[in-house]
Length: 573
Image 1 (cartoon, rainbow, N blue to C red):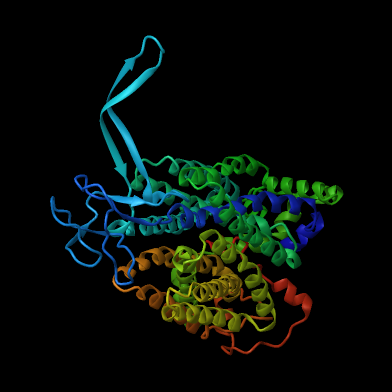
Image 2 (image 1 turned 120 degrees about the horizontal axis):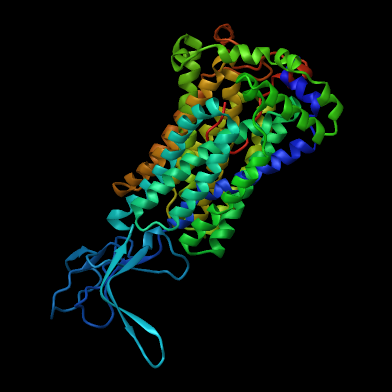
């Protein structure tokens, strides 16, 4: 008896599964707030150079750029008793005295300013009985992430992504050693603590450290959530449960613009999206440990106890009481034997077909993460209302995921994956030729590209699971997610190249995405194919891209692997 049949006995479609979905889905709802938070907390308002202290009173004239707009990073050199320069003539200099910002709509890390009092002396008024604090010295700490320092906010986002990358590697190993639930619980607490601490950061360097820890903890949450969500449901409903979990993440993208609009101060916004994870930390004690992990780790009595709890909640208490330790060991003997086999990363490159799969999937994963976050984090660049555009960017995921599922099941994984990346790369390259005075057209191309990349993510998680053999699937999925995190970490840094030529970032993003789509053309079709169990299985596959012969529906359902539940992010497999 397989583990799926064991779950059917105690109930794989009942109140337990619904409660588990809700407990795991509520934190996922808030993950999008952290992944995309810098869209609003690092927005750059309109700004210009602050006049020098000795400038004469009257209107301050700013030099104009090539488009006739006031320069944001230059000012005319001020000479005492000199005539006021006009808009085009006169020597210029950088903003030596700082900047003046338009703070009428929002505040962000870009404009952050802290004042610290030094040498305080207190004066007590005997009549009105109030104390006045007078400072002999006041030190003002300004972040001013504009002009030559505008790269710092991109570095901050890259460090956040670096946290998800390193966290995925470290926490994945710890999850195998200590279990899914302890890692999930600790990750909730770490995200709550580091996210809240970021709201009180005294400097941008401290802020980046806490954002790195936020990324680290998010990897732990996604890793454990993906496993615990689909493990206790039937094979036929895994895809549905995964899709529902994915829509929790999509709903979070709708929540973020509303929060940002209602809370324009970035510190309060940062705190608002972090505090709920203290509650999720407490709620996580109701989430059961992975039954598969406990069996593989030899904790049969605890696994049996959880199975009986599932049976009780699902109204099958008698079936749960019938289960015995010997029956549990017998049903899970295949999983136990596979866990004892030792495979390494080197095995991914040992044979020709597996080597080709690894290289092509790595490029597809890298290009998807690389391009996805270039668009998702570039909302501010399209000249449209920031809050409205983020709603559209979140909303496009709904039809994108639905179309991806239809295409995956009817046209196949091969066509879906390659077309999604090729169309996304084409839309990004098309942005180069659309001028900035056509914001609507630029927005349409960007939204279309992001929808294609969302479809690519949905297909990749399924496709990768079906291409790697069972004995090395976990390692293959880990390497694949490593590459998508490298791509998402590199995307903000590539944006810095716009300082040399504005079109360079889109050339790089579009070209790499097209290469990823081209690499997907060299992968075999897996629709209606049985999952490879060993490395030898995939070496005997016919490397044709046409769909194999249709198999019976029962066998097809037994081979189905769910889509990833949490949208773009590290996978637990």
